[in-house]
Length: 246
Image (cartoon, rainbow, N blue to C red; front, side, top):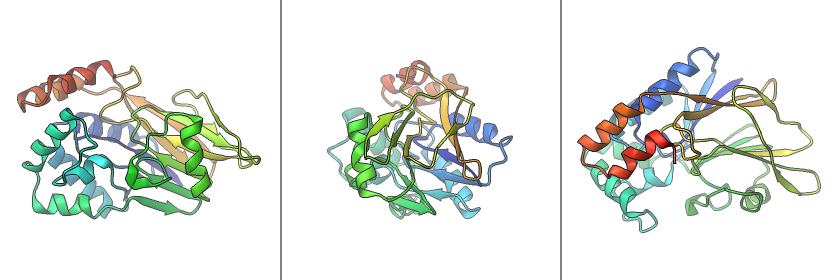
């Protein structure tokens, strides 16, 4: 089975559409969404409607911290993030809000685990940014491969049979063999708001038959998204970072 794994869409319709177009030629069997469908971006209602449509067709989805924050006071969000969530609430229907609140924190499929942030206390929204931060996820889960988002920067970690965790380099567009003598944790980069110095949308393919993970990047019309952010009166910093990828 070939899984398309998307995360941190952040109400960015243009990036979402570009990634779905990229997926179209990749023989995808199932889509998996790792949360934060809303927040930061100008098209939350469209993005939720698209996810609802795809979930009805078999897609899996978990809840992110921005999804949780819709209609819920959350002091963990920074001022710009909270401002956009407050704006987002007024754009969503009761059905949209119920959909977000009904998403689970984790989903397991065979030997794969999907979560927005760390598998260790998913509701605490821990950022997996190093081997040290990856370790707790391996400790609490028996999954062979864990997929998460939240960080907005792609990364790949593994744990060997002695328990040692190490990071791995990777390229884009080329499958990385996930050797079975190790367990793996992949941080899937953001579709709608990458922060690794590239403005290109990021997503991944997990081929369970070949046991390979492929990180992909795709360009999109970030200028249009930035213009929408400004037209909505949302923070300028959120428009500027789309182009810079920071």
